[in-house]
Length: 300
Image 1 (tube, rainbow, N blue to C red):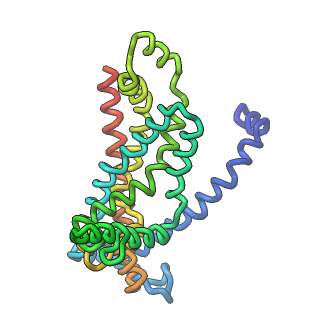
Image 2: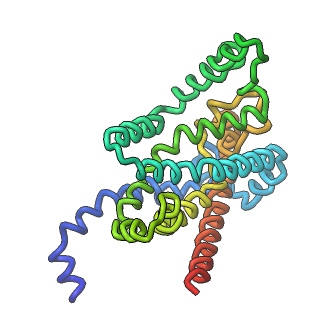
Image 3: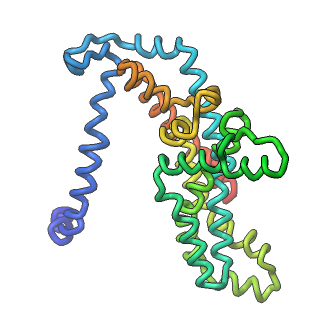
């Protein structure tokens, strides 16, 4: 009875949930039915129900493919390096922006940092080739005009890897600062005032007040990023990559594109997608479990 009374009294709040819940049911849970393709010899004309059931034969075929292990290695490598390079960048930027006292310069800096997030990866790819191209790139034009050899930013594997990571930081770091800035605004200002009384400098306040206050946010974002370790976006490696650096640029998302879209092997593509989802779930649960253990130890 209490639940029914509460529902009638605050029905407007429940009504607000209709659209988001419907979205998840239709576009997130509904497509899960397609997972059955991983266990069937999918025929486009026969449909999912009409296709022959093959059980785990699709998984055996995928795990026997050398290209699968190469793309899996590249996916883990790029995501791990992204975690090391790109994950701390928004945190450092947010702290620097928070410490700025000039309001107009702070707002201008935030706007400049946010803009790359709204640029399509197709446009970013064009910018990358215009800036880092070996023959006609702006940077190499300057380098060769000074009498030095051009740097193969996009054709040498190691140079491409550095370029890939740098472009990722440029595109995502500014937008990631929003979460940290929101968390920073929730810090009690009396803590900083007390630190000023004790004679603490700016670096000491950042280390003793700012970073500990951001710990829950950092842990939450780390868990989310760990869940994406096995998943990787399609646009960035596909647009920036090329045949010269395919040993590094070929990842699971581009592998699924080649196998599923170009070759029409939908069963194989679905198997890889399901593999990514399951392993990603394991990473999330593992990171969450580890963070709770560390939190319990810190409390003790």
